[in-house]
Length: 256
Image 1 (spheres, helix red, strand yellow):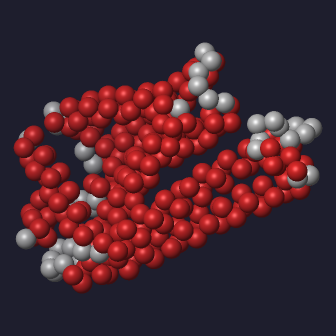
Image 2 (cartoon, one colour):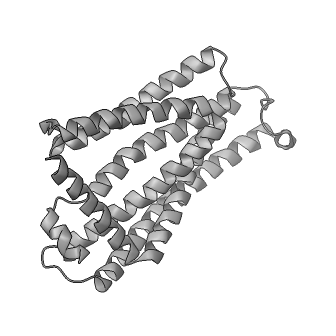
Image 3 (cartoon, helix red, strand yellow):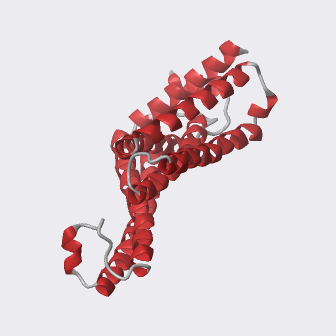
């Protein structure tokens, strides 16, 4: 059971790498576009909070950069609103562009790899798209974790302990052949992993701030938004790298 599970996962990884190497330019392009998309979404999420703070203040708060005080408060509010909308539009355009990149990348990879009757057409493009998105999301999670570590190291340390603990427990249950980790049960477990990961890290951040922990409230808000994206992406990474359901024999054909 354990050997079969490990062999299947190894085959999936080798298969994913072969697909992505068959179209490296498009795979790299997807990573870059994904990073721009996610950064734009984070900024578009932070700016409305800044607007609300400004609206609730009689003057520009002192923690804003000094050069901002040169602007009129009303003009600054309108500028931040428009900037937030602009970054949201950039996020949406990047998502559309990424879909087109993955479609083209899948076509190129399909032309370069040997044909297999069991994995062609839409099934092939879906597989390539899932693996490419999984790789892009992995890069985002790694970079976002580094940025979050700069903002609040203790929060990252707590989150990593949570991820390691839960991952070890799930892996142990998988090796035991727990039925809940098969079929739809696995997706539910992974999604719950992301939800509870964010909530537990959020509770830790709040309690740390109440105890006089590091960072200001503004950076805490940024940390929460980044943290939410990280725990949204981790389940997607896991589910995407699992790929469509296919057996080891089918994977072996593509590795030859």
